[in-house]
Image (cartoon, rainbow, N blue to C red; front, side):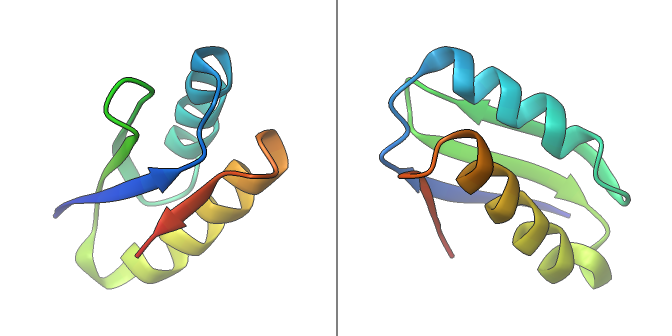
Length: 72
């Protein structure tokens, strides 16, 4: 399953790359893409695990860039 989420207050392309790499390492994630230009996060993962994955992804985004939020 592929889902796309809007990111708010992602202010750094380098931070976006760090987020993408960290999210790709979450168990159950097949692929992840964080686009600084479009302010979007796209995650490919098993549908049954997506809720837990997005919570972990939100925590990663918050740790790397404290003002960044994922719109569910």
